[in-house]
Image (tube, rainbow, N blue to C red; front, side, top):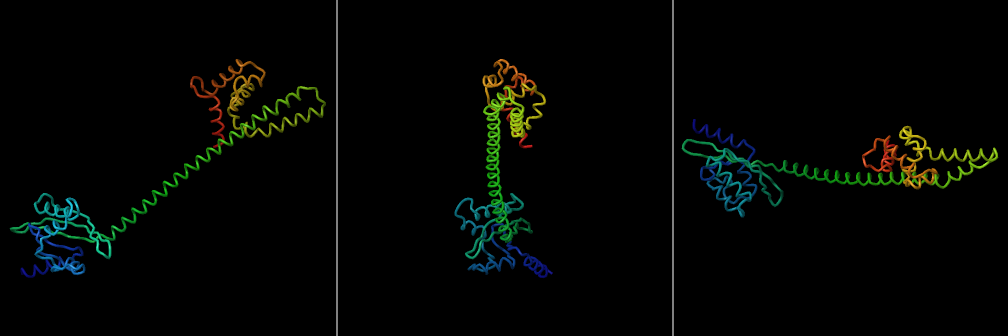
Length: 293
C-alpha cells in the first residue's frame, strides 16, 4: 500500500511541467520530478541530474556575488518559507544559456510532514511571456515616441497656422488702411467738387467698387457695427487699423476729445468699461473669431 502511494506520488510529481524539487528544513534536495531531471541533463549539469542530496541553499550562496542579486534573493526567500516567516514566495529571474535568453518563475511553498518541515520549489519557464512583455514594452515605447512626434508636429502646425492667420489679418488691415487713407480721401474730394453728371457717375462707381473690394473684411464686424452709430463705426474701424486718436480726429475733421468720447462709448457698448482691456486688441480678436468660424 505504501509503495503504491509512493508510485502515485512520483507519477503526480512527474506530470507537472514545471521543474519541481522538494527541500528539507536545511535546504537539502530530497526529491525532484522528471522535468527537473531533464533540464539538468539538457543543460550539462555534471552532478546527478536529479540533484538529490545537493544543498540548494548552499548552491545559491556560492553563486551569489552581491547581497541583492538573484541567487541571494532566492536563498533569502526560501529560508523565510522554511522558518515559517511567510507561507510562500514568488520570484521571477533570468537564467540565460549560451544559446538563448530564458526566464523562470520560482514559487516556494511550505508544507509539513510528520516530524519534519519541507518546502516544494517549482521553476516554471516563462520565457515566451517575457518576450511578449518585452515586445509590448517596445511597442508602447514606439507609440509614445510617435505620439510625442505627432504632438510636436501639431504644435508646429498650429504655430504656422496662427502666423498665417495673423499675416492674413495684417494684410487685410493694411489693405483697408491703404484704401481709406490713400484712395478714399481723394475720391471724397472729387465728390465734393462740382462735377459733370458723367464724371460724378464714374466717381460713384469707383467708390462703389472700392466698397465691394473691402466689404468681405468689413462684414466680419457686422454684428459689432449694428450696436454702433455711423460715426462710432468709423472710429472703431480706424482704431482696429491701429490709428491714434489724433490721426482719427484728423481724418474725421473732429477734435481728439470727440474721438475719445466715441472710443468711450464704443467700450461701453462692448461691455469693456472698467476692464482695462485694449480696445484695438478686442476688435482684432473679434475679427479672428469670425475667421475661425
